[in-house]
Image (cartoon, rainbow, N blue to C red; front, side, top):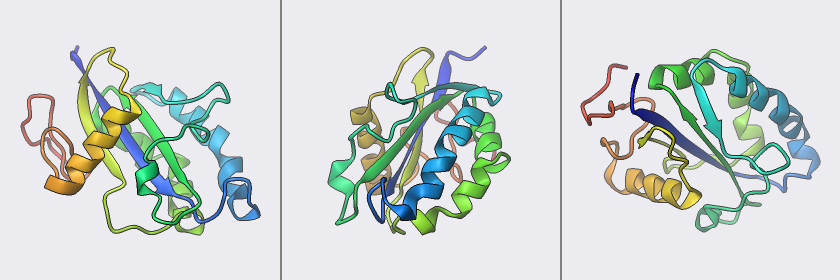
Length: 159
């Protein structure tokens, strides 16, 4: 059993406020997609408020660039493979395919992964630092992507 867990954060710049008609399909999918994540093999934890999601959590406000706000999704997984299974082989895929209906296209990285000691709950400040590190230096053992991964020892991981 590993002493490490995979943390991930992804952010999205809203095209319009969350309450707008444009975002109603996205909002309608939040609860079922989050519930599926919570039950997915390898899922450990996700950032959420008392409302059950993270839409009211304010972080990454430096990254708005004129958008209606930034949504934060942060979670922990047992492995890279368990995260990939959820991201690419669940109902999450359908929502992800529609992301540009609701969110700005951005050139910078919006998703970052990093290893944390088992039991550690990452803060949004920690996640912000990891995303900035990835944007500045590219994928490395301290901050990486699903395309360029590292194992907890810092060695490149199989993709």
